[in-house]
Each structure stands twice: as structure tokens, then as C-alpha cells.
Length: 471
Image 1 (cartoon, one colour):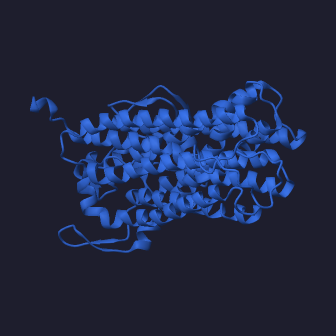
Image 2: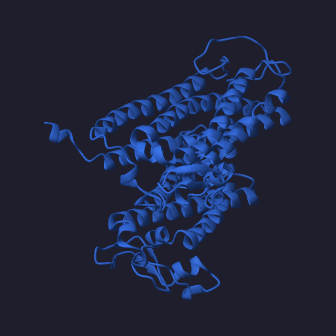
Image 3: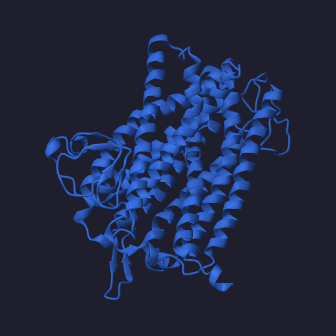
């Protein structure tokens, strides 16, 4: 019986971390960007006396509170998992790896405090002072995201520490840990992604409403604000992503070889769409674009640009064939869906530029309704590229994954428990958000609550017109 339960813990530890991170990362864009959407609506409400914008700001702030709370829980689970699933990693590198998380903790508490103040301030503060209490939420959300990404970037480009002869960390330079070489590129990529994904996710809900016949000004405004933010972020993200990919080519060649599925070092490397790498080092299937990978890697030298292949590195340091195929497929998904979202943004932009209106065809709304899910898939694919592309290292060229994982052979049990718990959490969160939206639609003019499902009150907001509906 014990031999059956004694299963290799490494794959299960990796699976649990991947699952919980993949779940949590869906909430991150909402945590980072939703406050900005709220403030845009809030600003419009005050500046133009726009009742619809005020209702949106108030409703979105309540949604924001729910997703923030769930994100806090799932984020806390992740911090425990570092110690439970990766004790040897944390035992050796915790002093350095923990620095960005200490900074993130400060941003988290700042964000939590001002989320509470902002929501409590509806009808208790004058409009402009209340508006400004929301600004720290935006700043703290961005700062917290950058801090966490700094920790991940450090795993890709470790720096800021000194090891003694026994390999133990004896000195840590906090600034060098946080501002490692990969951090500016990864942080910019994630922050822009947060606004892109958050915008498309929020807008997709209103696109569905419009497809179902809710074409009032409230739904149009609820669509236009977040979709505009996402549409503006999309070309920026493509530029940031291109810069990051070129940086990976120069600084993380083994990951770049996996991304481009390059078995042997050579020039004039094609950009292969789809396809897969075989065990004998040949590439099958896919659509090769001659020389394009070399051109994109360094446009100055074009097709003569040499791209290092897997054969340039020791066999033990190479990602496996399966990992290469996973990274390459994730890269294709990220680029393909990112391009689709960019074209959708261009469609919206041109229509707004020339007609000051949304595209008339329902196909635009159908694709926009799907854009929320597609943007999440794009983001998840990007994280697969980052994490699987670093294999076999947990800390690049310093510690391998199997050397940092727990030796507890029963970790598969915690994986199954976590999956079950997260399914319940996910379903409950969706039901709560849908229930809030349904209740507000049925109520019309809302009976304001201080927090979601909190006690009702009748306190009037100083300086706000009596006839403005709230909720």
C-alpha cells in the first residue's frame, strides 16, 4: 500500500504550482487594471455629471472588491506553496527570492486599505476627495505586480547575492535582486498585459449584454471604457513583447531555441508556425516562413543572424523534446491570439476614428465577447513560455527543479485537494459576480450597499445630486 502512495513528488509539485498560479493569474489583471477603469468612469461622472458613468464606477468598485478578496486568498495560497512544495529552494534562496515579496506585501496592504476607503467613501465623501482615494489603488496594483514579476525575473536572471564556499547565501543586495536584468522587460510586459486582459475581460461582459439586446447607453459605456483601454494597450504590448523576445535571444539563448524550435545552431532560421520537434532533432509539420526567425532576432543582420540551437548546450541543461514542443506551441498561441486581438483593436479604432461609433456588424460584438477568454488564454500561454522555457532550472544555472522540490511523496494528495477547493472557489466567485449583476439589473436604480452584500444604508453622498442612481 505504501509503495502505491509513494509517488515521485516533483511532477505533482510542479503541477500544483502551475495550477494555482494559472488560476491566480486570471485575477491579477482585474486586480491591477479594474481600479483604473473605475476611476475613468468616476472621473467622467464628476466632470460631465454622467449618471451612467457614476453607476458603472460604483458597480465596478464592488466587483473589484470581490475579485481583490479572492485574489488575496489565492495569492496567499501561493506563498504557502513556496515553502511546502519547494522547501529546498526556499531554504537556499529564500533570503534573496523573498525580497520582492516583502515589497509586494507593502503594496498589497496599501491597496487593501484604499480599496476599503474608496468603497466606504461612496456617499460619505465629496466627489473629488473620494475620487483621489482611488488613485493609490491603481499605483499599488501596478507596484505589487511589478514586485511579484521581479521575483520571477530573478529566477530567470539571478543576481544580487554572494555565495560562500559551501554554496550558502551569505550576502544579499536587495536592489540588485529586485532590479535584475530581466525585471524591466518582464515587468513592462506583465503590467501592459494586465490592462489588456482586464480591459477585454470587462468589455466582453457588456458585449454579451449588447448581443442580448441591451443596447442602452449604460451598456455601451460599460463596453467602450474598458475596450478602449485594452485596444490602446494591445499595440503597446506587441512592441514590448518584440523587445522582450529580442532580449531573450541575446540573454537566454536556450529558451529562445525552445521558442523557435531550433535543434542546431545556424543562420537563416525560419519562423515555423505550429509543427513539432522530433526526438531525432528534425522538425515536422508546421508552416515555415524562410529566414523570419533570424530577421526578427536581429533585423540589422537579417537572414544571416545566427540563432543558437539546443545542440549548443550540454544535454543535461537542455529542455526536453516535450518541453520544447510545449514552449513553441504556447508561443504560437500567444502570438496568434495576440495578433487577432490587435486586429480587433484596429477594427474598433478605425470605426471610432471615422464614425465615432462602434462597428455596426454583430460579428464585432461576437468577437469582442470572446476576446475576454482569448486574452486570458494568451496571457496563460505567455507564462507557459516563461516558466517551461526555463527548464530544467528553477533558478537559472544555479538550481535545478528536482533539487528544489519537496521530497514528500504524498504531495499528490494536496494537489487533488487544491484542485477541488479551487473549483469550488472559482464557481462560487462566478456565481457571486453574476448574482450581483443580475440583482442590479432587476433593481434598476440601486439601493446602495457599502460593500457587496453588506448592510443597507440611506446616507447621502455630500455634493452628489439626489436623483443619481447608485450601485
